[in-house]
Image (cartoon, rainbow, N blue to C red; front, side, top):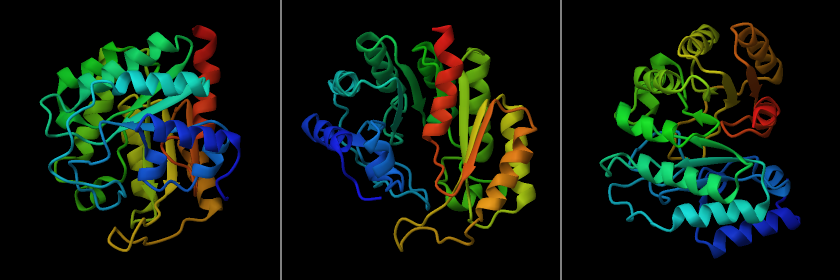
Length: 281
């Protein structure tokens, strides 16, 4: 789909004017035209340089990211207010150079959005903060309705495709801790497929996530962003994605989205969560 339309132009203009970043652009998301065209965007905060070096990710990486912009939480809140969104996903690069991993900045952004847009549903898609409980608690205490953290892949492949500071078990602990700190917050995670995993490994990963209390799971096809990144081993058929969805739904998740272009920020999943959360607000 070719990017076009008033909503797309408005989002692009606002991002440029306020010097913001989106994971839609940085990660080369295949859904950018559809989402921006309907007024949905995933804001990426704390700069565009990640301190992690995962083999699957298109976001730029390096060891000397820029200083945090103290005005960024306000800029993000203003952009979201101007777009008139009902549901927003806030993600970030990993900032291992910061003592708290940037959790304070993410928390400030959530609070600024809530102050300026009190009726909006906020979903931060967070790093693992190297498993630091105080950092996780800062996010929980900002009271977002949903918190996401992606496990990315199955146990066997985790060490191969993710940065050495990340791990399968650490991601599970982060998701479990969120529920321990506040069981009312919805948790969400995502799995990439097509990088050499087996069907049984996908099912086991889903079971592990459900055991950690995860409510919503998305499963999508890995697409190689550049020739320097991890190659695709297999393109999964739509029929196989349907099979994954049917099997995993029976595990007790509140919602499962599975398909070739499904990503961790996925409009169908967000729409489901909005329908569940909105009546309680």
